[in-house]
Image (cartoon, rainbow, N blue to C red):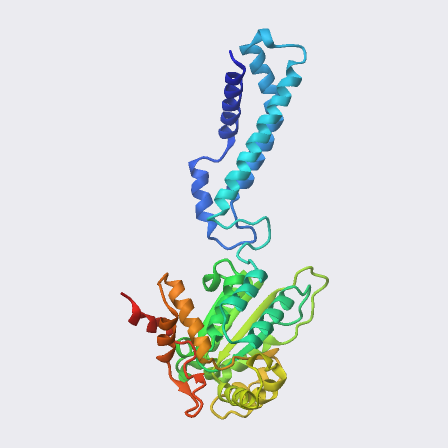
Length: 399
């Protein structure tokens, strides 16, 4: 029999040997059933079993191949036939390993895999940096502060408290957008992750008369997420409207905690509070600086921090600034979102067209930007809605 046919028969025999012990259809069903379940080792459970089968088959293949070849082709069975067969068997095993690696790469191209840890967590800092730099417009302060603090916190060996960031600015300036970027780059399922919980005050806690019920529900939900995940993210939208008792309830979750022993990994939690509170004073400071000849990108945290914190603490329209979250300095950073200008609205319009794969011209972007209302009345410098509703405005240009 020609040598190439012998190799083909040998390869077929090896594959049958592997498949005899590999997971069958029922194993595949278990694989997909468990793929979406939370746990410390997601990925592909069957993959490890196949690797184990491959190693076991490798240990036996050389002997089986020698016996088979000597029975089928006795004339070619020499004294060193077993050694030669062993080399061929090893070659086939290496071929099988390369095939398995290719299969793994193909599988992981559409199904998340990881080698260990909690596979719900991705912590893609490069992706977060890219999103904040490319997709977020006009917010150099928020971009730098959010990236630096989130990365620094998650790379800390043993943090002794949760990270609390409070986003402040007018509607449409990017607060929700940044919160979503954080979720998408820290967790494989983004906002849908088991490790992420979003609370919208007017939806989840609309009636003050039910505050006792809300307190119980909020406590249970925070506890459940933190029990499921060693790294959790909580987002509170319209935080300035939270009932004072709910704000007080959050205090213990943001306090410093005594570290237990010498754990290599401490539980981590990030709390993001999104609020329109302080937006007016941010806009006033920015406007005055621009009138004084400052470039927008030259505006620093030092220009805004004191004014913003004073506005939050003195506000009579919200209990947020009077809560222990602010009074006891449990908020790590107050992040200002600057008012957006005409040029930023054009960029938002461009992104909206591109996201829907629609053609546009520079004139079209100008038309969309001109649909927005700009303030103050004299300067007409800032979009009163930021980039909010820009996506809806491009519907006027659909064919």
